Each structure stands twice: as C-alpha cells, then as structure tokens.
Image (tube, rainbow, N blue to C red; front, side):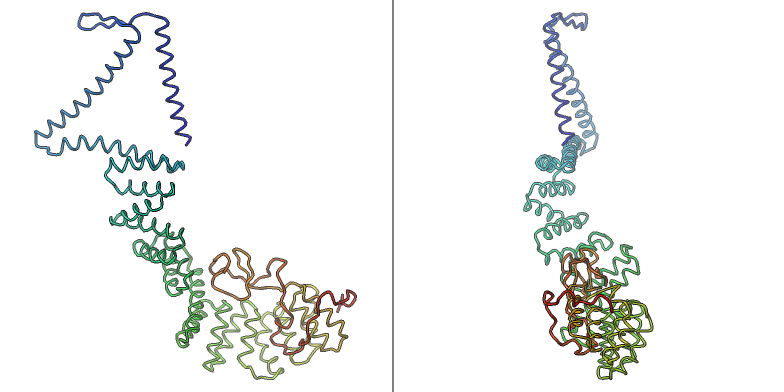
Length: 477
C-alpha cells in the first residue's frame, strides 16, 4: 500500500515538473535550433520538446526492430524458434513483472490489486504453477473461495505442485469445518511429505479430534523421527494415546486387546496415573495381584494420588480394616510427609475406628492446607471421638466452602476436569492435564464423595452453610 502511494506521488511529481518546464519555455520565448547534415532547423520551444520526444521514441523502435531483425537472421540460419523466442521473451518479461506486482500486493494486503495483477500474469504466462498459486491466494484474500478452490485443484495435476494444492484445499476445508475431508487431505499431504511439520501437527490434531488413537500413534512416531518432539515427550504421548485406545477397545468389548494396550501404556509411562490404574485393574481381572501391586507402588512413588489408593484398595476388596491398614504400608511409607499420604493414612485409621491415630496421622494438615477432603476427615474424626454435633457440623460447614485441593487441570486453558482425559474438552490441548490445585472459585465436592476408604462415617446429611452458627465453627483442634 505504501509503495503504491509513493509511485502515485512520483508520477504526479514528474507530470507537474514537465508541465512547469513547458510553461516556463513558452512564457520566456526563445527558439530551439537543430543542425543536421549542414542544414539548420529552427523550432518553437514546445515543438522542439515534441521533436525530442519523437526522436527518443524512434530510437526505442529502432532497438526493437534491430532485435527482431537479429531474430529473423537467426531463423534463416537454422534457429527455428528464434522468432517465437523473441516474442515470448517480451511476453514473459511483462508476465513476470505482473506476477511480481501481484505478490507485492498480496504481501501488502491489497486484495483487488493482487487479483488484477494475478489475472494479467496468468494471461501472459499461460497458467504457470506460480501464477496459479498467486491467483489462488489472491482469490482467497478477495473472498472468492470457489475460484481459489479451482486454482488449487489445478495445482493437483502437477507432481511438483500437488502438495501445495492439497495444502490449499486442506486450509479451506478446515475453515469450513469439514474435518472429515480435511483429515483425508492431511493424510495425503503426509504421504507426500512425511517430514513437513505443519502437516504432521494438523494431521495429529485431526486424528485425536476423531479419536483415531492408533493412527495418531503413528503420527507421533513421525514427529519424533523428524525431531518435532523429543524422544521423552514422544514416549509420554504414545502412552497417552495407548491409554485412550485401551479404553476405547474395552468399551467395545475387546477385553484381551484392550488389556494388552493398557499394559503397553503403563510400560511406556509408569508414572501416568490413569494408565497405572487401568493396568492394575487388568492385572486384578487376571488374578495377578502381585503385578497390580507393583504397578500401583511404582506410580505412587512418582505422585501420590487418590485414584491410585482406590485402585490399591480394589486389589483386596474384602479385607478387614486392620488388614488393609497393614497392606497399605507399602504406599504410606514412600512419601510419609506428602499431604495425600497423610489423608490416606487418616482415612485408613478411621476405617479401623482408630480415631486418635487418625488425628495423629493428619496432624495440622487441615489448618495449614485446608481442603474439602482434609476438613471432612476432621469432621469424621470429631464424630468418631464423640464430639458434639455442632463441632462436626462446623467442620462440615468449613468443608463446603473450602478448596477441593489438587484436581485435573488443563495446563493450557486452566479448566478443571472431573476426571483425566487425553484432550481438554475446552481448548483441545493434548496431554495437558496436570494434577494440581485449580484457581480459586472452583466448586467444592461433598466430604463423603472425597472419602472412598472410610465407609459410612459421614452418612448424615451435610448442613447448609447458613444453618451453622459462626460460633459453632471450631478454630482449633
């Protein structure tokens, strides 16, 4: 846009200067004398300028005729394409000038100029691939989607430009929301150029959107091979895809295949909590409780998590509270100072009706890191110790408005999810779930829902916050 304005101002400046010069000559009179072959010619100033212009034009024509005569000479000397090359050369020169102007207009965002220059280049250059591409882009910029689509289809006919044509059509289909066609196009583009970063990323997103987990796994392999992803990240993502595929297979009733894929997911990433839980469940179904225990212990050593504790409990679902407390030592000794370990041990003590032990286990966690779960545990301890109902209700009232503690939160958009998923349902981020405390203001879950190991210690209805007198809420334990 700026260059166009500069050219307009230069043109106006030249015309103004020429007009001023002619006016100056006319007003000041004088004559122009031209001597040629011993004869002197005298002209008025204006006529003299015209004669000079005609003389320069005649020189230009003479050079053109000379070039044509040379082409004719070469033709009669056996060069059969000399004359055609002479005219084609001039045509190509004007075509490439128009093409360059069109590309500059595209870069400057001048849609109408780009379209006009692209049309001119197309006529002069006989639909060369470059003119087709510029025409397609200019048509897109000008909102002519159908015309742009036709140009991209024309590019498909040439092996050298087929990839560019597919990319152009793919872009249009994505903009139109036609993801089915876009996926097929992305697969074709990937087959043509398996190392193209943009194509690989687009294909992976479409595959995961369509829950084509196996195909997405192959795409991850390509991303690692082309150094788009590091080996560690690629391995982690392969585990996530395997876990998602295992769930899909199990939902379809393909238990044997689903189990194999679930175990592979756990092998690829032992610290991926949902994969460890599912792998342990598969081992328990086969009666291999020792293998299930090993899986849960390894995942817990990386990150203590309530889902791991629940899965560990399911290994021996019918054991007594005392036996469970003893068996869970394999977990609770790994990270004794971790808040999850403290709450787990307190829950186990509550299930065994060891209320003083539960109070010792949780310590001052409810005061230093108050969450729905830790406060609900304190309410259960108070009830088990025979405290007054208003004390229990006070703890529950605080639990209702407390933070839920760590949850599955998307690291990209920070949305909180009730359960882990391979993709965020808000921003579409893949493998973006982190077990962390969400921003303030998230709703809290009930205390009973957060205490899967305690049984029915809090079966009484939780009170409404406004029914609990402020003086009933304990300040210290």
